[in-house]
Length: 185
Image (cartoon, rainbow, N blue to C red):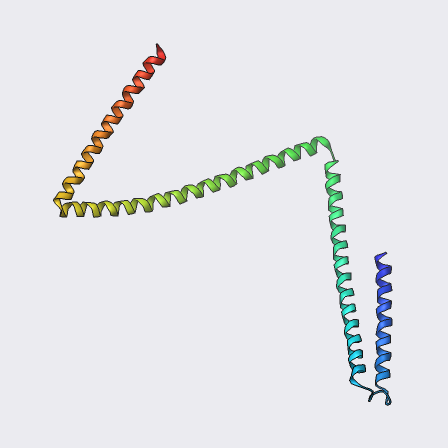
C-alpha cells in the first residue's frame, strides 16, 4: 500500500513539475514578459511550494522506510526470542538460571566496587582530618607553651575530663553489674 501511494505521489509531483514548467514557458513568451512582477512572484511561489512538497515527500518516505526496516529487524529479533523461549525446556531453564546467576555476580561485583571506592574516599578524608588535627594540636601546644596560664587551664580541663570519664565509667560498670545480678536472680 505504501509503495502504491508513493508512486501515486511521485506521479502527482511530476505533473505539478510539468505545470510549473508550462507556467514558466508561458511567462517567458514575448507578449507576457512585460505583464508585471506579480506574475513572476506567483511563478516563484509555485516553484517554492513544489520544492517544499518534494522535500517533505522524500523526508517522509525516508522516515517511513527507516521505521519499516526497524520494525522488520525488531520483528525478527522478537521471533528469535520467542523461538528461544519456547525451545527446549530443561536446557532453556538451565541457561536462564545461569544468566540469573551471572547477573547476581555482576551486581555483587558492582556493589563491592562501590564499597571499596567509598572506603577509599573515607580513608582519604580521615587522613586529611588527622593532618588538620595534628596541625591544630601543634598550634595549641605552641600556644600553651607560650602562655603558662593557658597551659595550666588546659591541664585542669584535661584532669576534669579524665575524672568525669572515670566517674562515668564506674557508674556504667556498677549499673551493668547490678543489671546482670538482677537478671540472673
